[in-house]
Length: 90
Image 1 (cartoon, rainbow, N blue to C red):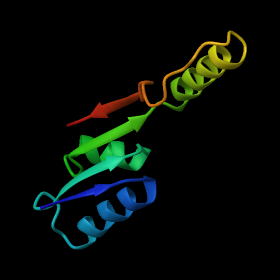
Image 2 (cartoon, rainbow, N blue to C red):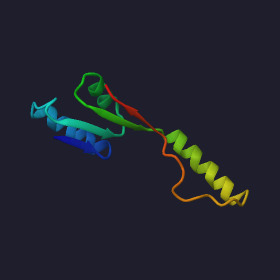
Image 3 (cartoon, one colour):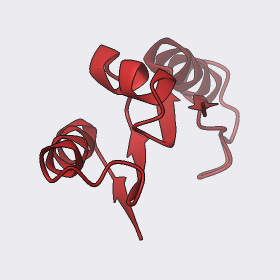
């Protein structure tokens, strides 16, 4: 059985609920968004996967696409830009 936290709050809440219920290890936890607590829990083997977004790169890609479209007049394909993130596992 496992839980995937789709945002910071659901991941943090799922992790805390599993710890409080003393079922760490029996329930796999995957998180989208990395906090210091979740990274620490990952290192301790209490969380199984943390996907960390890279907001600086996401913003850079958005600005580059906007520049290409509005300034250079290029067509920017919808949905074809990469989503910068990093997958962390123990």
